[in-house]
Each structure stands twice: as C-alpha cells, then as structure tokens.
Image 1 (cartoon, rainbow, N blue to C red):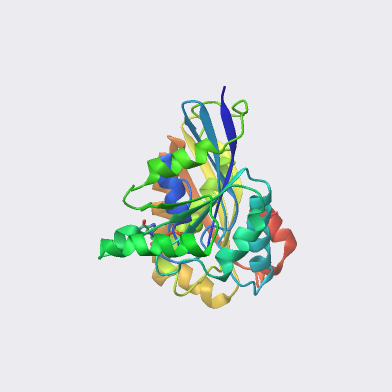
Image 2: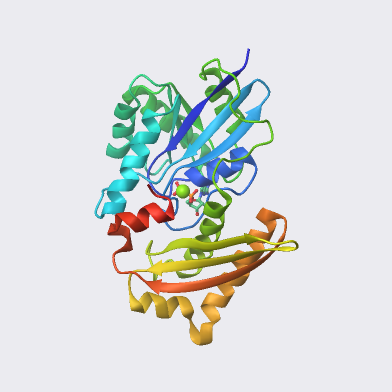
Length: 291
Ligand code: GDP
Ligand code: MG
C-alpha cells in the first residue's frame, strides 16, 4: 500500500513557510527573503519517503488584501487549502493563533490540520515552550501541534510522520526523483526576483514582476532574456543603479543561480520596464503565471 496527497503549507507572511518547504525538500526551491510576501503563488515540491509521496504546496502569505494582487494571494491560499488533503498551518511563538490562523482553521473544514509552531530556536527560555503549546492546545482543536525550526532542521521528522499518517491511500503520481512540476521558466523568473528583493526590498517593496521573454537552449548554453516590470520610473532608476551597477550585480548573481539550477552555462539578459499598476493588470498577472 502506498500513500500520496497534497499538503497545503499556509500562514501569515514571514512565519517561515518557504524555509520549511526548502528544509523538507533539502533543496532551495522557493524564495526565502527577510521581507514578507516573496512567494506569490503555489509551488509544488515533491517529496517521496518510502511508501509516502508528499505533494507540498507553498502559498502566499495570508494578509489583509489591499490591491488586486493581495486579493489574488488570499484566493490562492484558500483554493490551495480546499484542494489539499492535509493542511500545515505555520505560525511562530510571537504570533500564536490569531484571527488569520482561526480563518485557516475554518477553511480547513474536516481536513487534518497540523499546527507547526516554527522558529522555536528563537525561544531563549526553553521552559516557555510547553505552556505555549498547552495554551494553544486548550484554546483550539488542531489535529496535532508540532514545535519546529525550519531554519535549524528541528522537529521536521515528527512533522513529516504526522503528515504521512494522514495521507490517503493512493498511487504515487510522480516519479521518485521528481522535485517540482513548476516550469523551469517560472523558477528562473523567481531567481531573478529573489536577487532584486535581496538587494532592494526597502526601495521596491513587492513591486517587481519578472517575465521571461526568451529561453533558448543552445548546444553549450541557455540564452535567457527577462523583463523586470516595476510600477514607477523611480524604481527603474534604483534597479539600474549607478552606471548600471545594481542591475549588473542582480544579473550576475541570478545567472550563477540559474547555472546551478540548469546545470549548464547561462547567458542572461535583463531589461527593466515601467508598467504602472502591473499588479492590478489581469493580463500581466496571467503572463507572470499568477493566473
Ligand atoms: P514565508 O514568508 O512564510 O515564506 O517566510 P520565509 O520562509 O521567507 O522566512 C521569513 C524569515 O524568517 C526569513 O528571514 C527566514 O530566515 C526566517 N525563518 C524561517 N524559519 C525560521 C526558523 O525556524 N527560525 C528562525 N530563527 N528564523 C526562521
Ligand atoms: Mg514564502
């Protein structure tokens, strides 16, 4: 008998969902950034452990929607929960179970819902952990509460076991060595976006969309051209930098990451375009892969 199923990893921005997904997969798949909301859409990570195949879905952070992109992100999270077999709700000691977490509990319906209390490595006083766990357990009905640290790889084995026990019996939909079903183009666009966010998250908060215009595999290298859409002319100037220094450092780092991902030489060309309100434009959102 084999088991397989979809696991929605949900929670507020910045609680460590992407870090957890990467730690579970042992690969760098989703963006990890010190700034909230860097993961805008679902990412399927596939993890095969013995008889169980876990299809892990990372989701954008749940938050109060202000723009169409915000609405879209919440809708994606809700849809992801509804399409899943097991829900992993990530939170951290300082956040606990608030309004957003209660909404997830509701949305989960009859599905098993595991509360992953992340970042426990931050608790200086370890004796505080037990009362926190008890407090949550008394106030809310979670299938299980698992203290973890995605960053330090603590508690992940127990979390995986709790998930596996609740997966339905099913054939494995993917081969054992598959890691993701995301198109390579999408992953490359994410690499570029990550390098920008790592360098300019204060100046250009969430305001970038990366579209891969060209992806040509030649004999000895892959030629990639990407357009970076920003809402304002000032953003464009920041991203170009003094004598193009910012853009060239983004390009260099993204190219190195892309070479690791593709295992080939990469030629990467980056363009910046001012597209006001791109996050309110349905056609561009679709092009970037948000719908
Ligand atoms: P997401 O928005 O929920 O996907 O959160 P990320 O995975 O991008 O993480 C947000 C921030 O929290 C990053 O700076 C991570 O390094 C940090 N972080 C994630 N997991 C842990 C953890 O277990 N311990 C600590 N101390 N920091 C963590
Ligand atoms: Mg994330």
